[in-house]
Length: 136
Image (cartoon, rainbow, N blue to C red):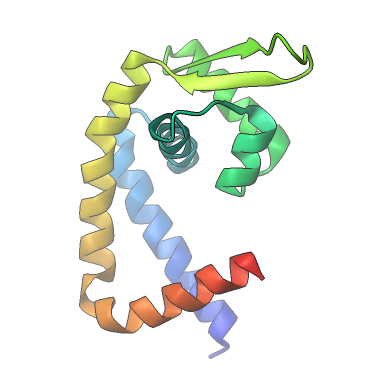
């Protein structure tokens, strides 16, 4: 079987499990990914705008804006126009968003540990290669 096709199938199976695990928390996988990236920015004591968030999370800019709009209506993120550049929309987690992410993170980690656990030694090499390809 083609390696790319195999990787695609594994990714789809993994995403299906993540989606099912996050559903009771009212989050999608993309919402969780964007919220996780916002938390990383916060822990670095920085700010990020929507465009930068999309770049950091490797998501489509337009889709990122749509997802953030949903998260904002649910009180999980707050967005505002930057003073220095009115076209730039800054975004951060609210306290409620931080709480929801804190609840969701161990759920996602448990799925990851179960799904990838048996292949752990072999996956380290693959993850190293994938990480290197992102910076190339």
